[in-house]
Image (cartoon, rainbow, N blue to C red; front, side, top):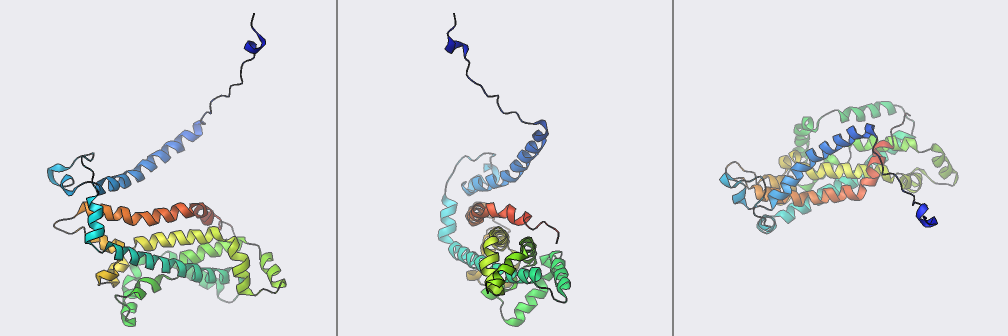
Amino acid sequence: MRTASARISPHRTAPPRIAPTRIGPALWLGVVTVFAGVPVLWMVLTSFQPMTDLVGTGQHLLPRHLTGHAYREVVADFPFGQWFVNSLLVAGAVVAGNLVFDTLAAYGLSRFRFRGRQAVLTLILANLMIPTQVILVPLYLVMRDLGWINTYWALIVPFLASPTGIFLLRQHFITLPVQLDEAAAIDGAGRMRTLVSVLLPNSWAALGTVAVLKFMWTWGEFAWPSLVTNDEGLRTLPVGLAGFQNQFAPRWDLLMAGSVLAAIPVVLAFVLLQRFFVRGLTGGAVKE
C-alpha cells in the first residue's frame, strides 16, 4: 500500500515555451549580433598578435601567438597619451557646450511664443538634412579667417551646439506639462530658475541621450580634426591612429591595439548611460 506521502506528487512547473512568433525576431537579432560582433572580435584578436602573423604567409584564421607587445609599443613609442587627452578634452568640451546651448535653445523653442518661431525650427530641422561634409570647406575658411587653424578653438567651437540635440531636447520639453512652469512662477521663480530647478531634474534621460550621441560622434570624428590640425601635439585619436596605416608598411597590430584602447571610453559611456538612451530617444515621440 502506498503511503500518503507517496501519493502526493510534487508540483512541477512546465518548462517555458517560446512562442513561434518570437523565433523569427530572435534569429534575426542573433544574426545582427554576430554580424556586428565579429569585426570587434577580429580587432581584439589582431591587437594581440605579432606583426609576423598578420602579413605574408604567416596569416591564420585563428591566432597562433598572443602577445601584448603592440599595446606597449603604442603607449611607449608614440604620443598616444597626448592623443587620448586631446580627444577627451575636445569631446568633453563639446558635450558640455551642447548640454548648455542645446538646452537653452530647446527651452526657448518649446516654451516661448514669438514671431518666427516656426521658421527657426524649420531651419534647425533643415540642418539635420545637410551632410557635415558639405560645410567642411566654408567652415574651414571661417576658422582660417579667425586665425584658429591648428588650435583647440577650431576643434571645439564649431560644434558647441547641434540641431540634433536641440530637436531632441525640444521634443522632450514639450512632453513636460506647462503647469510645472506655472507653479514655479507662482512661487516666484523666473525662467532660468524654472528651467534649472524644475525642468532639468525631469530631463535626465534626454540629457543623457544628447551627451552619449555627441560624445560618440566627437570621439570618432576624423575628417574635421585632420583638416584643421597640423601639429602632432594637437591630433586626436582617430587622426593619430590613421598614421599607422601608411601606404608601404601598414602596422595593423598597432592600429588594432590603438583602436581597442580608443574604444574603451565610448563603451564605458554607453554602458553607464544606456538606461537613459532609449528613454531619451523615444520620450519626445509625441505630437505637439
